[in-house]
Amino acid sequence: MITVDHKDFDIAQEYKQLRHAAGDAGAVVTFTGLVRELYQAELGGEATQSLYLEHYPGMTEKSLELILGRAKARWDVLDARIIHRIGTLLPGDQIVFVGVASAHRQDAFNASQYIMDFLKSEAPFWKKQTSDNGSDWIESRKSDFEALKTWK
Image (cartoon, rainbow, N blue to C red; front, side):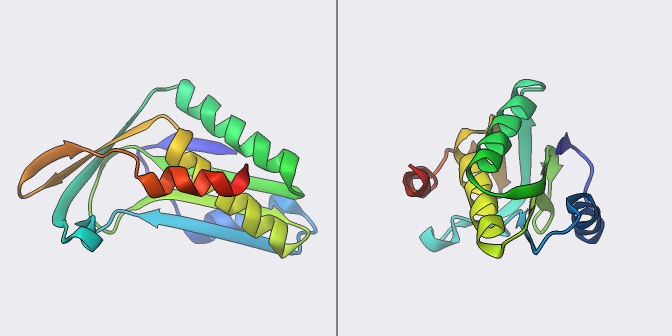
């Protein structure tokens, strides 16, 4: 199931629903992405005041469905859930949730990492970070595209 929304999500509730929907799962893997307090901290980054996320309604959900479908075709996925927030978020806020249930842990781990790697690089979201020094649209990192090579 895919959700793109302004509203926050409850990790415990999402896990519970995923586990219930998956039935006889042997593993459930979840990932939650958060707004960083420092953008590009490894480069001596700036303190984040806010992060604004835009999307293209319809196109974004279709892109996420395609990513999820490819993961399900590749691994034994009993059920999966992707939530991505949009709008203005503050440091520490939850941005994204990916949950994957499978009969086996390795399939759940691989599918969830695959979903996140492709979500970061292919899903049509635009992010604008605001700091004390102004606002900038965030470009995908080279490391995001490098991660895709793992799956080819």
